[in-house]
Length: 325
Image 1 (tube, rainbow, N blue to C red):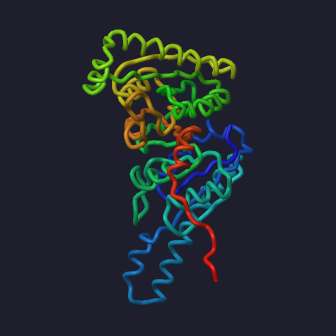
Image 2: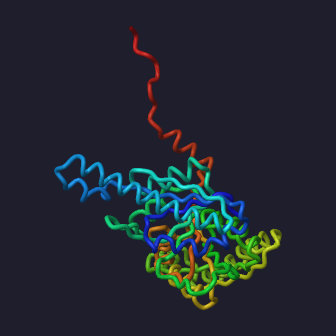
Image 3: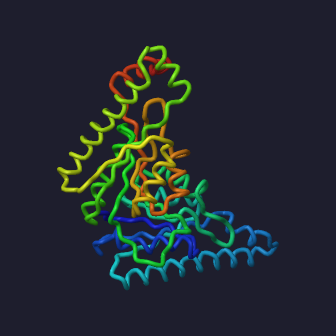
């Protein structure tokens, strides 16, 4: 499924909660786990308050040594479970350190809780996790820190929200990969958003009755999901589909709770009609309320040939000739 999984840790029990979910995503013990810690400047705040240079140096060394020993302890524990584990302790912005290691080490998954806590700073959605989501090229497994860890975790039912866009579809191979490895079934959910006043005004100008438009939307959604289902069927993944009307974030959460979904897999944004599924809205709402982990990947907008030509034509012309001597 995955070959290299990066796990950010900040010495807090909250950040460690992601380890509970590892067996489902690192089913082959040949998977390499990279434990990454970052010492941010704010962690030295109280040390810098001293007027004694020697004391400052000693306190900073103690912080670093304590972090290294912490990572080594987690490493030993995971190695005893059969995993290959390496540790990486860096100085600097936590989100940047995580993204840099993930890129340099060619990781194919980042797994982290949405917040953790050290004595000096807080890693939370809107801060470290938020910036990692916006910059990392790898899929990110996100766990709310308040999810129940009292029972073993297994991926049996996957929810895949699709809005009809290429961006949203980029999550389909990821859901397929996880489903095949875990023998899970996939529920494809398509949410038809209710027409806004502006949408209705546009329809009125086309003289197309709302009923006809809704019928067409429903038919298009069914055909679209049937095509997506065929792709999963060819990959030998059992799937089903559902179409609902409403607000996407709420619809996804309602379905996840009602069907006892174990994992939500989705792109960080997509596009449907006149609206946008963006990380700052739909995915964030899903993460804040999801009763299960969220496997999120950043969708990449494909530039059409005609759009590229327009951009090229509108770009300023630069005189690259050298100035005469």
